[in-house]
Amino acid sequence: DELIVGAAEAKTVVLLYERAAGTTTVYIRAGAGRRADELLKPFGASGDQHVASASLSGTTVLEAEQKIINHLRTVLPALEE
Image (cartoon, rainbow, N blue to C red):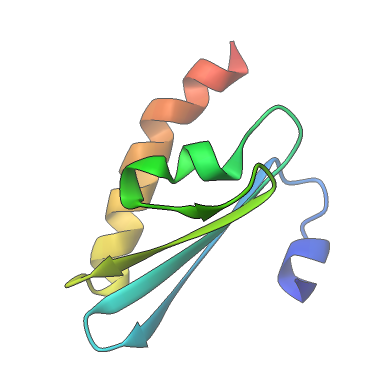
């Protein structure tokens, strides 16, 4: 939460961390006009429109980062229109 408060003007904040070897958790907080649960839906997200998280098993934090960034690059431009 402290990191997110520091990025108050950000439309979307994504944090990734490796909980155990080969399991990465993705935490996303979405601003107005975006739904965190929908942004992470393809990854089995739990949460609500403001905050959601997903766990990616068998994925290093670097692999998860690439997957999430590639996914967000495809869905976020559509939200900007």
